[in-house]
Length: 209
Length: 296
Image 1 (cartoon, each protein chain N blue to C red):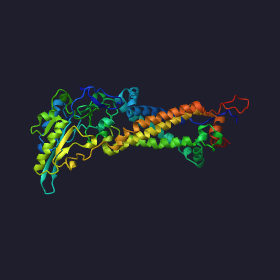
Image 2: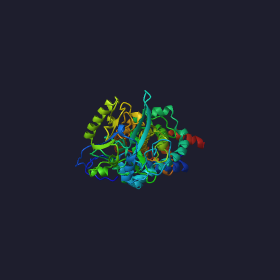
Image 3: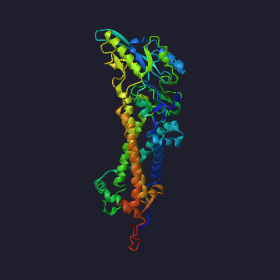
Image 4: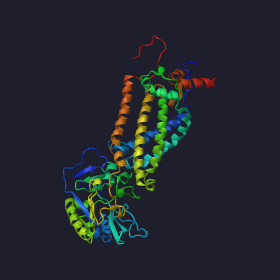
């Protein structure tokens, strides 16, 4: 196998699914931030003003969650945390210093990607459930005010965590060249796979016999 | 209500810079003496009359409360409680419910829309509906369960303490109409003094626990009650004994707000400076040949 050979990393379905989640997430994030901090209220202009931001935000949130569920199922098995992932995380200094040769074998996803995956799972479920509890005028009236207050706090805390997670995710895609191509065009070079996901490449070669 | 007192705003929702506050006015208060209230609901009528709101005709739900609850058009409602003392004496406690105009308003703290809730230097907390986005955060923030969102226009409404009347030196409509003098209005200082006299009178008449309801947990209120049983405010249709902004609301609209933005900013900047120091991780650009240019 030539090192320049392209191998499929994300199928068309996976890519479309990812980008639906990504686009909806950015819109949900911007509209949510508009209502979270006064200094970002101007973001509501992107959605047609304050009332429209308030109306649209929960619907966009439902799209994020609905689109994330199939993505979550698709990537679930590949994100199981193993011993080598714990070792990978312990060696985070080698990770950020681009010393990948010192890291343990990496499967389809590295430990950083796995941590983000589980953060997404936890935070998006939290955001979805708490979002329903505080959704006016539809559902909030059915719940006691203490629960609504708790849900509001958890909603903003989970949003904060996952926005930071996604900032790191986006940066990682810019930092590790070839990642954006993998999620837009679907393929990576064998050289890329060997450097970043050696365990996954081995599996791929084994599968092809 | 639209903002009429634009020069004496001491707090404005979702605003981090100072509000126009060059003019300051005397702190006012409405004092509701529950021991004098006969439950005639003239104040409810006067409120709808002055503010020109009309609630839908409802149904009798088996109690005297009519309408049964506050609504976007009914900003004050008489809450009737039949209270039996330990000695078997029956008391009819009638509390005029409505916005308390807290010195530390939970609604204003929770509101995400700049200028949708303002607090004037006279203490009145006013909703400026034209800026309201209808999210209901004011309901989440209020310790007294007062704001109501209209089903017609999705804006939040509540008692304005007749800010339009007070601005031009008139007392609120409910005060003007009260036939027994149970509702009085004036400077907060005068109202506290007036209440003190009423409490002495009630104590002389056997209400040993009579007192003023001006809860400190919300910094005091600009609507105060004289209660016959000030040691048990809850018996007055659930008037909270120690109202305060919920710690969950305080955390959400307090520390979390700036810290979250700071953390997001730090994450983005850390990424950027990682890129300009450590640099990209580019598998395909790496050349196994030793004659490739040295990379730093």
